Length: 205
Length: 218
Image (cartoon, rainbow over all chains, first blue to last red):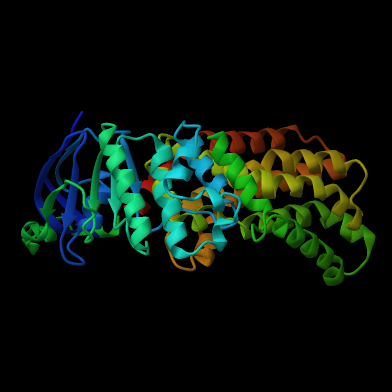
C-alpha cells in the first residue's frame, strides 16, 4: 500500500505555509524533503503523520501505518534506555527491543538512565524507537541532528534495512545519507498569503 | 494501555516524580487548621468533614499540571497521539494514574487526619466512603483541565481557575456525605448524587479531554 499525498495545503497557526504538495511514496522507497528553515517541512510531516488536519487535499494510506520521529525524542529521563524502548514496544504491540538496541549500538547503555545520556545518544534512542513500532512508514523530522558521523552511518544502515524489508521513509534532512532517495524541494510550493484570511478564526481554535 | 499506566506509575514514584507531594500538602493543610481556628475540639469536630474535603481537593489540584505537561515538553504526547491506542484511552489511563498516585493515598490518609481534627467516631466510614467515591471525579475533571491548558507556558494558575469551579458539585455532595455521616444522619441521597457525578464524568469527560488534546496538538 502506497502513501499518496495529493494537492496538499498545510497550515501552521491558521496560515498556509505550503500548498499543492503531491507525491507518492511506494514501499521500499525513500523521499527526502528539502527546503530552507521555516519552509514548512515540519508542518508537512506533522500533517502526513495525522497530528493536524490538512487545509486542502488528502493524505491516503497513512492510517495506523506511520511511525513519526519529531525534533523531541519523547524520552523519559528517569527511565533506563531499555525501559524507554520497551514502553514504546508495548504501546505499539511489539515485544522485542533487542534488534533496535543492537542496530543503534545502545546495548552497552541499556541500563543507564536516559537522563544521563549525551544528546547524540538520546537521538539514537529516539531513532531506535522507530524500529520497535513495527510500522511500515517512517516519517522523520531532521533525524540526524546531534549525531556524529559513525551514528549517521548506523542510522543510514537502519533506514536501508527498513527499505529493503519493504518499508518506506519520508524525511526532512539536509545531510546526504547515501540512500537512493528521491528529493522533493518544497520551496516552489510556498503558499501565497491570499487564502489565509477567510479562515482567520482557525488560528484561535 | 496497561503499559502506559505502568509507565506513569513508575515515573511518579521515581525521583522527581512528585509522588507524595499531594499527600504531604494535604497533611500540612489539615495540621494548619487547628492553629488557625484554635484547639477547641467541639468546633474542630464540626468543621472536620469540610476541612478534610477541601484539603483533599487542593492536594489533588496541586499535581494536575503534571498530567500532560511533562509528556508535552519531551515530545511523548505527539508520539502517543500517533500510536495505535485511541487518545480517549490514553487520557483515561492518565486520569487513572493520577488517581492512583494522588487520590488513593488521600483516601487512605484521611482517617488518620480525622483524628487530628477530632472527627466523631461514626464519621470515619462515611469520610472514607465519600472520598473514595469523589476523588476519581476530581482526577477525571482535572485531566480535562490539564488537556485544556497543555502547551501553555506556566499554565498552572489558569488550570486552577478553570478546574476549581468544576470541582464545586463534587465538593458539595462529598462534604455533605462526610458531614451527615459525622453527625449520624441519613447519607444515601448525597452519596448517590456524588456517585452520579463521578460516573457521569468518568463516562463523558475522556471524550472531551481527547477532543481538546487533538486541537492543542495541532
